[in-house]
Each structure stands twice: as C-alpha cells, then as structure tokens.
Image (tube, rainbow over all chains, first blue to last red; front, side, top):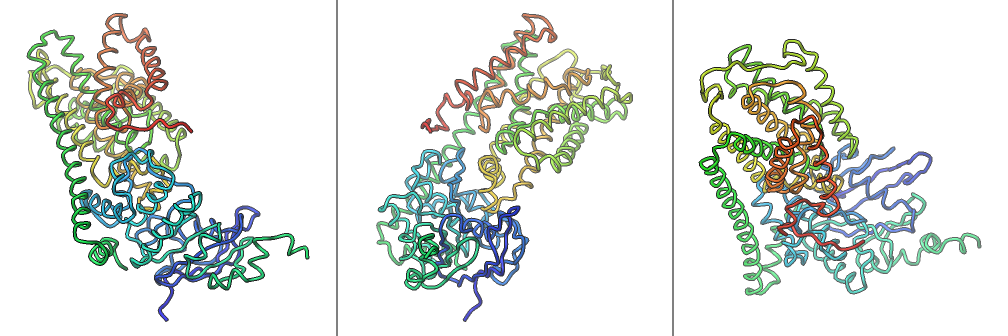
Length: 243
Length: 357
C-alpha cells in the first residue's frame, strides 16, 4: 500500500483551558473522500484549521506527501497542494467572480493572463461560467459556496479541505453539491470534508472519522459507523449515557 | 498530482460532445476578449484625457489658474500613489506626508548642498521613502485596521518634529532653493509655469499607468484579496505580509517623487508645508472622494477637490482660516452618507448590489 497523502499524528490543540483536540491521529489515502463528522463542539473545525494551517497545534505533527508541515504557514501549505474552503464563506467582495478565482489560479501561474484563462476553465468545471463577470457580492449563497470551491481548485491542490460546503443548502442544491464533490474526486483530487449532517455525507464519503469532545471515537466505512454504539451515543447523547 | 486543467481537458474529451466543447471554448475566449477590450478602452480614455489636459495650457494664461492645474495634477498623482496601498491593499495610511517630505527634503538638500540635479534627487528620495516604508511596515503591518492608521499618523508627526529640529535641513525655517536660470536639468522655471504643468501631467500619467498595470497583475489581485479577506487570501497562497510591504514601498516611492517635484515647483520648503498632517489628509482625500481602490477615483477626486480647495483659499484668504478643513469635513460626511464607494460609483462601472442585510 502506498503511503498516505496526509497523516495526522497525535494532534492536540488547547485554547486556554479548553482542549479542542486531544491526541487526534488519522490518515487520508490518496484519492479518497474522507468525512470528518461529529456533533457540535466535537473539534471538527479546529482539526480542519490545524490541517489547513490557520493555527498551530499545541502538540503532535502533520505530515503531508511525506513532508512534515506542522510548522508551515497557510500559504506554504497551499504551495504544497492543500486548498480549503471556509465554513462561513469568505469571497473577495470588491472583485468579480472570475477575479476571485484568478487569485487562486496565480498560485501556479506567473502571469495574470494565464491565470485568467485557468480561472475561466475552473469556473466552467464548477458550473459558474455564466457568472464569471458578476460582482462576487451578487452571488446567491449556493453560488458563493461554489465560488469558494472554484477558488480553491484553481490552486490545483492534491488535497481539498471542504468545511461544511454543503451546509445550508436546499436538498436539490445539496445533491448538486454532492455531484460536484464526486466530480472533483474523479479528477484525482483527494478530499477531506467536515460535515455536520450525517445524511448528506454518509453516501458520499469512502470513509469517515467521528470526533466527539476533541477525540476520535470511531473511524471506518459509513455503513459500519451508523451502527457503531459510540457514534450513536455521541449523536443522541444523554439518554444512552444515563442508561 | 494532476492539474485541473489537464483533468478538465480529459473530462471534456471524455464526456462532452463536440458542439458543447466548442461552445465552452468560445465562452472562454469571449470573456477573455471582452476583458482585453475593456482594458484597451481604459487606455484610450486615459490617452484622450491626457491630450486634452496637455492642450489646456494653450488656452489658460492666467498664472493662478495654471498653478491650480499643476496642483490638481500633482494631487491626482499623489492620491493615485496613496491608492496603491490604501485603496488596493486596504491599508489606510494617514501619514503619507512623511514620504512626501522625504522626497522634498532629499532632492532639495542634494541640490542645495551637493549641487546634484533634482532628477537624481527625486530617485534618491523615492528610494529612501520606499526603504522607510519597508522599515515602518515591518512592525506596523502586524497591526490591523484602525491601529495601523493610528500608527501612521504618529510616525508622520514624529517625522515632522524631527525635521523641525534638524538645523542642517533649515529647521522650522525651511530651505529656499536659490534661483538660477530656467533649466530642465535643474527643474527651475522662474518665469514659466508650462514646464511644471507638463511635468505634473507626466507624473499623473505615470501613476495612472502604474495603477493600470497593477490592476491586471499578480500583485493587484493579491492586494485586493488581502484587503477583502486576509485569511482567505492566505489559504490561496498569498503571503499577506509581503504583499503589504510591496504595496507600501511602491506607494511611498511615487509619493516621494511628487514631493521632490513640489519642492522644485515652489522653490521653498518648510516642515509644515511638506510634512504636515493636513498634507496627509489631502493625499488620501481625492481617492476617498473619487472612489477608493478604483483606477479613476483619485484623478476624479483631485479634479473636484483641489480646485475647490484653492478657490476657497483665495476667496477666504490664506490657508490659516481653516475654511478648507471645514470643506474637507463636509465632503467626507456627504460621501460617507450618500456614496460610500466614491464618485466613481456614479458611473456604474463597478456596480454593486445594495441588498439589505
């Protein structure tokens, strides 16, 4: 078996007295879609941001494509091939849709012209080609989610981190989103996605890691996890624990 | 790893029908040519504007009006330079007078003490200002928003105090540039305003062209990304700190060049006139008035603001009365209330929706 694309080793992150992640270890194989799930406050977003480089772990290490990236800043991680979206969308609102994507495309293209070309291609791939010239502020919420994905894809990542990219969408929008995520994976991009709603992620992911109270409580195939006692307990909570 | 372009190509050949692929290709080249056409139109408008301004002096013989024209062009160039850091990169500096002063003092001191041409002094001043901007940026770009702005004000005021007490540079009395024969080499024209008009026009055009080039360059996109959302920018590979430093250096360089020009133009500089806080405001204001972070905003703002300032000054007498300050205040309030995006938004080019929260 080839070495994993991403390896998280014994990661701990404290915020003052709060331990958001405690001794978390997981691996992501090349080409898979990994779901990172768990109830509110489980530490999903913290783990996600540690991998993306928004903040540093208190202990532990992160290895990406055979390289220790624990101390690398976010731009350097992007250069190595890690891209992300944000839970609360962060479009560049003074720019047009295509200009937003140009920022990402400049990661691997020196000239603005080539970057613009690349951006338009990425917009076509993510179904936003028609909105290329529109100001980013005018997009609908689902379009903004797509824009975030397009911007991240334009950096040509090996690993794409999606932070609740399907949250707040209507069922039909969510189905389209699922389809887009599958397409991206089919193009050879490995995906780690944080999701809150189990129904959305379970059919999509190859494997899932379940976090609760900052710890990994289970991992495996979606079909196994939905029957896992600990997972059910974490989601349904007190009733089981009290029993 | 597989690039998405490659992937995209593979996908289109694998799954799209021939007409579909052609359509998509046409869409791309369509938006690309539309973009190129838009850029060419901007250049054409600028060329026409520059030619019209170049012809203006032929009809204006009044020295006072010529003076106003020179100042308007100079402030257009200054505010355009300020706009690089404040408008595109989103780092609001209210201390740009320090760079203006560095330019004015460097070229003037090199001229009066070493006999070096102001052309050389101008480059030295620009370079020195860029270095100072980098030195200040190193600690200051760790500050965010208002704190950064406050720091720029404090540093500019400190610079003013230092120069006020610097005897070699004339202290509070300033420096008089000795009169010589009219000459382009010395940028001295005692009897003729025309060369100054053309020099100021050249400066304004240069600053505009630099901004124009920036708009479709890596730095231009990076700066706007930094302004809009620094964290998102970092996630896309933008090194935020380095971006701010580059914007600051470029902005300071051109501000100082205008400072050197001003010194040659008025032949007399003192700390208050080339490093005062009011100057910092006057550098920022045209861009704010015209449209911050836009290509035409600073020029448009200067066109409105500078003649207005000069006219009220001559009408109410002197710059000490403070009437011009009242006018700035009123203008800022009107803009903030009615057109926060500046006069450029009247033209509807960068249209933005006003959807409520």
